[in-house]
Picture 1: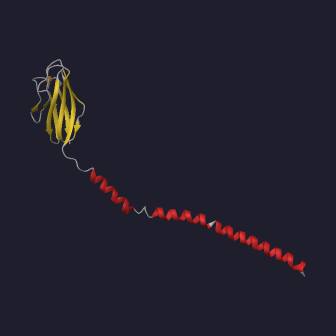
Picture 2 (picture 1 turned 90 degrees about the vertical axis):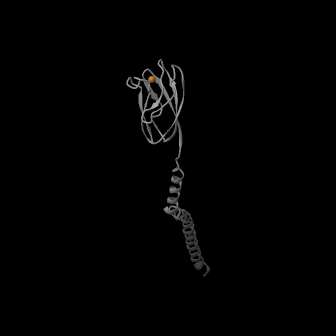
Picture 3 (picture 1 turned 120 degrees about the horizontal axis):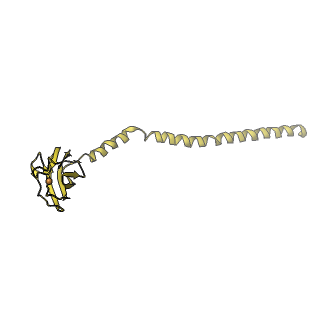
Length: 158
Ligand SMILES: [Cu+2]
């Protein structure tokens, strides 16, 4: 009677072992799946735009303040032309750094405002500081005849 039962017992044990391995294997698979699912759910929550959209207005508000700017423009004059290195500047204090590359004496004048710098001889120069509101200005040399000979250029202030 022991001979008949033992093969059956081994077979049952074998099936139980296979079943146990199968259960262990099935249980081993789900754990990796759960960790990947949790990060996705966690990542979805921060993506809720209300928090990220509130950050953008505060960043643009900090850059909004723009008051009296102070700008320098290098102005090189010669017979007969004016070259400025910046033709579009913010409203506010503007300093022209004048260099007369000669040979005639020259100056810098804001035609619309009738504001004129000192006149500099050849190889001389100096600063000419003016307060410019927004607008479009004609920069000339106001020595008679020089504008007509070509000493004029445009400056945009905004
Ligand atoms: Cu001139």
